Length: 261
Ligand code: NAD
Image (cartoon, rainbow, N blue to C red; front, side, top):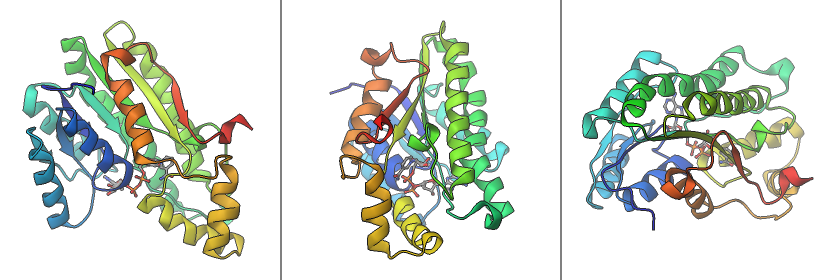
């Protein structure tokens, strides 16, 4: 098992889905964690306490990823634990499925801010201390939609293609500092985000929700299986480990064969 004792991880959007499971796996491996994201206060506190029971420091900061000042605070909270954010995972994300002529302007702005620009701000604020330490790991949650498009997801596909560009650029800038920056590109994972878009897609395409699951989501994924949290944790733990130091600027794709087509 990867030993991350003494390291500190900040995971944006870790009150739900993939980010929450990353936080649990990181704490299990000995890393201190800073949780971030929205949700029920009591549930978030229960998660924080559960993580602390693994013998690490676990904090919560509710920074809104559309607000650069709050993002700066989040990184400072991470640095308050051991002086540096060793592991930064840019995971917060939202989705909206609609034809471009009907796509709400405010949703476009929110998706670009949360799914793309927030990673620029976290990286900008976390890098100076990582460089001082001479080691760091940055992971950006992209998507297969960072590599290929699907209709009705203009803002999401644009943001995810953008974050792959950001990943490559940062990788080149940090390559001689013991730091790596990589993207993880999952296919469909059955998280609350995907549950939400099943209903939207059904409306946009005039289908039932069952048809969307079978004929739209898993039709794209040749394995016909959702990607699991365990599979994503394995990829994430490899990238943050010493054994993963050769990965830099890459897009690690877990999509059941989707982009092989
Ligand atoms: P989710 O909806 O379960 O979790 C999203 C998290 O982001 C939550 O903690 C939420 O509170 C947080 N968040 C939303 N807006 C925020 C804001 N303004 N500020 C701070 N936090 C905010 O989603 P998920 O499916 O776990 O997705 C996590 C990441 O993985 C996203 O970037 C998503 O695009 C990506 N992804 C998901 C899938 C999938 O199939 N689920 C596939 C590919 C990529």
